[in-house]
Amino acid sequence: MVEVTEIRNLAIRHVGYAVESVSIDSGDLTQLIRSSFDGITLQINTLRPDEGVVALPDLYTSVFTDVFEAAVALHGSGDPCLAAYLSTYLFDSMTPLWRDLVTRGQHLLAIHLWIAVLDLAHEWEQQSGELVHKGSPYAFLAYTYLMTGDFDSAFSYIYNAIEEDRRLGVVCPSIDYPAQAPVYRTAMLSDSRENIMYRNVSVIRSAIETEINDYRRTFGSSFSMQDFDARFLQNPDLEVIGFFFVFTFWSIVEHRKRVSASMMGNDFSRLKNARWLFALCLVIDRLLHEHPSYTDRYISGQIAKFVEKQRLICRADFEALKGSTNVATASPDSLLPAILSVSLTLNGRAVRREVQYLLAAWNLRNFAAHNIQTQRVIGEDFDRIVSVLLHDILLILEDYPP
Image (cartoon, rainbow, N blue to C red; front, side, top):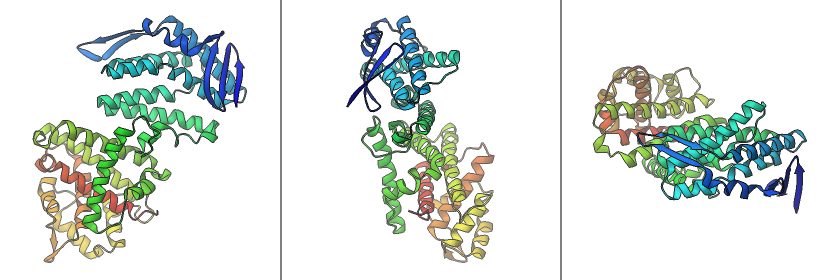
């Protein structure tokens, strides 16, 4: 049933918390905003397109101020959910212009548009000492950065949006934020189609599923993408590790699309690859540490506990293997080729593939944490090393409870 809530100089028509329309001083809010689109000045510095200049009409300052003050009043009167939806309705009134800019390939202008809108909101917050819900503009800004391939900026705004949604979830628990927010679904690679970035997310999920299928064939496992979701991406106890994994793996996938393997033979590419591999090793480290059976101060102790519990190798043989490979201090160029070919042996017998793959994570974790040295194998065999580390992640997750 449609309700009308009057607050200050606004009349809000809504069904539950979903705002259908807002009038401000008897004028339609959406029309006020959109009728002034032509008054927005958008300029790009061609030498530094990231330094664009956007000037919003003076009318926006007045309209945004009225809406923000009404939202604060709603929150104070015990209706924080409607207050947040009101702010979101205001921000979303800008989306037709954003969509038009994106459709015309003017993504950088679209970025500067949202930055200008957020600047207006931040300035009001600083002057008033109050907060309004800004999840929507953070999310749209993040999506636009994702479209341009700027993943550092994109994920910074994704996490800002999630923090906004987390605060909203506390005061308005019925909407189950941030878990049900579209931006959270992006960050956790949800396969829900109720996500503006679903097509982009599906590409990353497909890449993970390819690795899972290879893992299943390699180790005779029944582990599935659904298991990956349940034990990792949808596991609240591993949320921060999941965020870091998604950011790292998404960056790797997109980089592969832009730079072919044949172009990674230079020293800079090797160093950059080492940074990504180190990040995956940190994920492995933390997944082992968070598992109650493998907690240890160092990755060496975690792996030792894992291989022993999984009966992959006895403790004495593992200690001997550590010494024969010099895994803790060997350079990747000296150790990884043998692991990639699965040719490590001990006392004349082949070492289990699982053990060799975990040694790769240990070696890379230690080397990349303490050295800025180029390694040929990190350039030439980057994709294969990524697969090895992903297999390590899956090995560990398979021992997490469903």
